[in-house]
Each structure stands twice: as C-alpha cells, then as structure tokens.
Image (cartoon, rainbow, N blue to C red; front, side):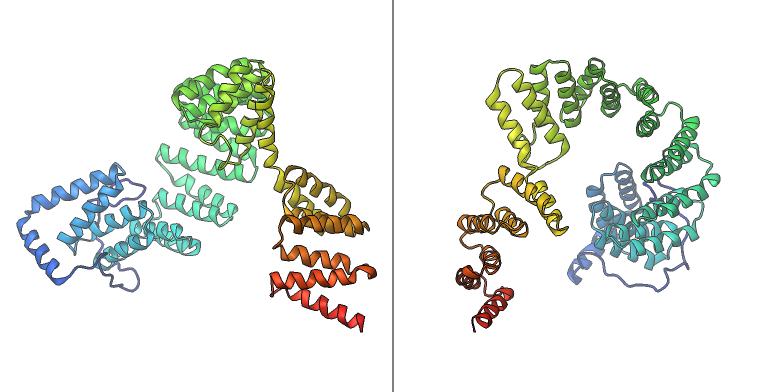
Amino acid sequence: MGKVIGYTNKTKKGRKGSSAGKSVSVSPTNSSTAERLGNIRDLVAAWSEEDINLHKLLLLELMDKEEFAQAKIVAQHLTDLQPEEPYAWYLRGVALLELSDPQQAELCLLKSMEIQGTDAADCYQMSRVRLLQGNLEGAGDWCRRALELDPEKTALHWLLMKIHSFQGDIDNAIAVGKEVLPNISDASDKVTTRLKLAKLFLYRSAFGKAEEEMREAMKLQPNNAEIWSMLGHCLSRQHKTEETLNAFQRAVEIDPDDPNSLYNLADAFLGLDQPDKAVNPLLRAVQLRHDYSLAHYDLSLAYLTMKKYEESEMAARAALRDDPAMEYQRTNLGMGATENLGLALMNQGRLEEAEACFRRNLQLFTNTYFNLGLTLFRAKRFGDALKNFQRALELKPEDPEFHNLLGQSYAELGQPEEAERSLRRAIAIDPKYAMGYYDLGVILVEREDRRGAALESFQHALKLDPDLTWAYYCIACLHAVAG
C-alpha cells in the first residue's frame, strides 16, 4: 500500500528500524474499554484477509477522491480491526489533518511511527501538522528531516518553500526553489516549481524575474491557461497594456469556460476604456458562476460607462445580492458596486434611492476620518485633526468620543469655549461617559474662574469609574491650590 504525499500513492517500503528519535507511546483516539476490545477481537476473527484488504482498498480510494470525512471513519475501523497496522494509522492521521484536526492527526501519525519507524512521508505530514498548528519552526524542522530521508521528493521542497514564505523569508523560499529546479525531471513538476517561484518574485515586486519564470514554464506547457492568466497579471503590473490583453485573450482561447479568465479579459478591456468589448466576456462569466460578485461589479461599471443605466443597476444589485447593506463585506467591491448603483439610479431620476446609496457608502468613511484625526492629534497637528473630527461628526453626529476629541482639539488651538461646548455635548449624548467628564474637567481647570466646575466634573467621573486614577490626582491638585 502507498504513502500519501501530495495525495499521490506510491509503493510502500519497509520501514523497520528507522524510528523517530524516541519511540512515543500513543493511545488510540477514543480509548476503548476492555469489553469493547474483546468484541473487536471477535469481529476480527470473522473477517478474512481478503475482506480486510478490500477495506484497505476502499480507504485508499476515498483518500484519492479526497473524501476525507468518510476516509476517517474507514481508517478508524481499520485501526480497531488491526491496531498494529501502521499504514491505517498513517492514513487516519492524514484524513484528520485534511479535516483540520491537527492534534488528533498527530496522535495517529506518532502511533504509525511507533509501530514501524519513520520515513519521509511521516515527516512531511508532521510538518503539515505543525504548520496547521501555527508552529512554523517545528514545521521547518520536520520538513528538513523529510528532505534528509528523501531529498528527491519535489513536494517536500515545495513545502519548505511554503514554510519559508510564511515566515516572511522570501529569499530562502526562492533559494529552495532554485536549488531543486535543475534536479526535477517531471515536466509538470518543473512547471509547478517555476510558477511557485514566479509568485514569490511577484510578492517581492520583481516583475521581470516573475515573467521569466512564467515564460520558462510556458515553454513546457504552452496551452496552460493558468500560466497565461498569471502572465497577464504580471504584465499588467508592469503597465504593458497590449501584452496584458493578449495574454488574457490567449487564456480564454485555451479555456473559454473559465470564469476567471473571462473576467480578467473583460477587466483588461475596461482598463483600455473599451467597455463594449468587456460586456460579452462578463456576461459569460456570470452565466458560468452566478455568484461572481467581481464580474457583476465590472459589468455594472461597463454598462455605466456606456450610459446603459438600467443594465448597470441590475448588475450592481447582483454584485450586492448577498450583502445589500454591506453589513459584512465592507470592501472596495461593495463600495464600488453601491457607487455604481447610486449613479445608475441618479441617471434614471430616482434621486432618493440614489441618495441612500451614496449615504451608505459615506458611513464607511466615518471611522477613517476619526482615526486620521486621532493620528494627526497625536502628531500635534491640531488644526488638521479638528477638520477630520468635524468630518466624522458630519457622518455620525451622535458619537460622544468624536465630540470629546473635537473638544480637545479646540482646547489645543486656544478655543476654550468651543472646547467646553463639545465636551458637554459628549456627556449629554452619553451621561455615563466617565472619560468625557474627566476630559471636561481637564479643559475647565485651565481657567481659574471655572475650577469649581472642573472639581465637579472630576468627582462625577469618579462616581462613574472609581478606577479613574488621574481624576484623584486632579482633585488633589485642586485642593492643594485652594489651600
């Protein structure tokens, strides 16, 4: 029976004597009672060797089909029937790993290694366990150990590249790919490696080197639509407009039923201000994938540019179908589609509906204005901070924290009356806003004739929040000044 590396079965070699450092004793998942074990032994006696082999074949078939939930059940049955069968434990571990249960997967993999030692496939899967657990150092250790046992296995080099990239070590990830590339004989594996290298170069914005890797891959697989699409994106980032369009067109010629390729082609046409040419591939894309929000969005943009406002409205609504109020996505896509919908409605004379769309978009900028104001305030650019707090309040006039920071900005700009007015507005909106009372006191204490009011504010802040340490300090200072 075969080991699963990258979901490819291969002939299993004997592994006796190559234990994983220290032998670890691991109990089976869901430990059995003595009575249950007795029942299992009776059951095993009723199973012929042929029956068990058929069971194993079923397990391998389920693993090949990536039906891991069923594979886990069959593997567990096999480990109950044959608790000393290492490969059943191994496959059970892999199935659990694919079902995102790294803890239980690790127990099964360690049990397999305890029975029959450790080989590269075990180390590979243990590396994936550590990766899923977020232990990048452990993942790297297991992966390097796998490579020591089987340095010619390309999938192991790919995994190490992935680990390095997760660690942010792009240079080492590239070095691993470059080192293994000359030793790869399989054309498909060469292509995969070059595309992985291309993505790493793209990550570093080394577009020329990324393009080189893609074109080398293309020599081996000239009719691979994925490569042409990747090349199109790479060329687009180099602002090679015509070449980008040609690459996406070639991808569509190779695979005319791929929604992503159709979308890429249409997006390139939109970039060239040719919305009429973008419409057909976009319509085809949304026919193939009804929930393709990006394609619906581009379609709304194309129709809007062509002044086909009703069609633009329909496409924009389709883009927002799953989240019309943008409660969840809060994305540029959602904002863009809402903008297009508003424009389409405006140009049909449906002004109230259009206004609602634009106001919905504006709400998403409220926190941006406030956070920008807070940043500028901390940078002591109080005038600029004030403007951004005012913009935030225009969009969300009943937020006490916005009024608070507006008041503090006025105070820093030497406008105490405006500052007090803003702070009093903050505590009027939220009478339990302890920090509002404290900050009001801080502003009032600067004016000798308002120190009585400042004392009241500090005392009220402490009633609301007895842990507000600075309020005690301010009260003590006021009493000291008063003598």
